[in-house]
Length: 121
Image (cartoon, rainbow, N blue to C red; front, side, top):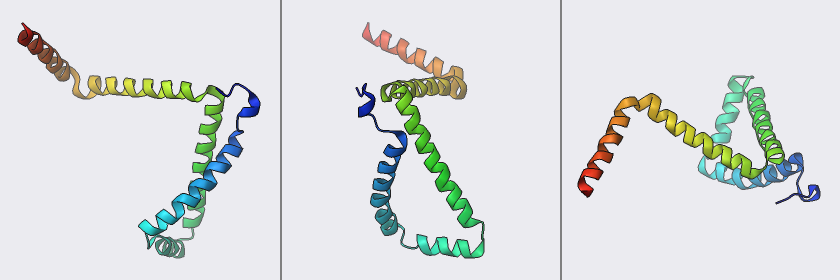
């Protein structure tokens, strides 16, 4: 899968292609679903001059997050990231059982298992 370097996209080129398509598709939907958003943004900018620099900083950070994601995907591979993501979800679910529900959930699980064993015999 994309072992030849010529078949792979450079992360910046890939980000440029996907960003333009995303913006073209999402901008009309955002304007249709939130008709007063541009007016509200202009009001915020009029009240506080810090709004526009913060908005631009937010856009730049989002761009850097996406660029980092593409670079990591290029270096590690999509399958590795998928496996690591699944492992993270399993670990998080196990941690949730241990830390939030604790021994109660373990007792409930054991009791349910015992009930199913008793009902089978």
